Image 1 (cartoon, rainbow, N blue to C red):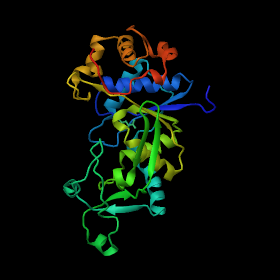
Image 2: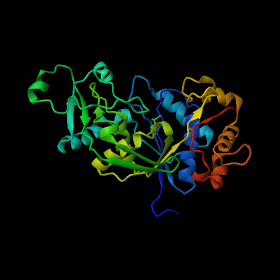
Image 3: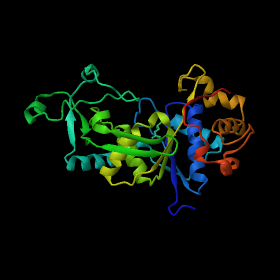
Length: 303
Ligand code: GLU
């Protein structure tokens, strides 16, 4: 048993049914924490209230339960936590790290800068040093950015190995609150994981480049750094990453064709946790779980 009880989390976005890739990540997050007698937290990431709904949140809970992926507590959905995020925003303000950014989307995209895998452009700092008079002349509501330092942020990922980023070079000053007042994913996740005492973050490798950004915010907010494990993404036969558009691999369809142990068994085989296919529950998989069995690369998965 670890000296500190491990705390993991499921952090789904309730904008649709889970697809197999989401199930794969959720299964590994559960195995990691439960193989060490830890605690699992569920949190609905519904910052984007246009795309998410309480109905999908309820279906996600039912799907996780059907799979045998249990949780010990659910923390409040992100859409209800604006006042909490305000407090952390004010902390950044007090540290003198925030400034308003008036750039439009087309201005940002016209800068021919490289961008991260998630489509974020490297922000060249256009609004960092505007004078008070220049700010007063801007009429549109601003987004708010946090200044990032010119230094490396390193992550020792349990699956991907060493990963580092210099935020000033690879990302630029980060938006923490959008012009419409909505807090961004990076801020909300850092606050929520920190306040819930999350010690390990297991999620798809598409979010690897978020880890150094969250590490930076953890430091500013005074939260300890969790352990990271960014698991490979499942690919369709043509090499694309599975997404919520792949309806035939969504749980609604899969539940008609497979039992939960059949699905978990297939995913466990792909994860290298079983030598050959067998229907299995997450509970039965616990003794077979080890991070070093897992492939690092994204892989094609066919049922
Ligand atoms: N809500 C994100 C998603 O469903 C996951 C965020 C995270 O795990 O940090 O893709």
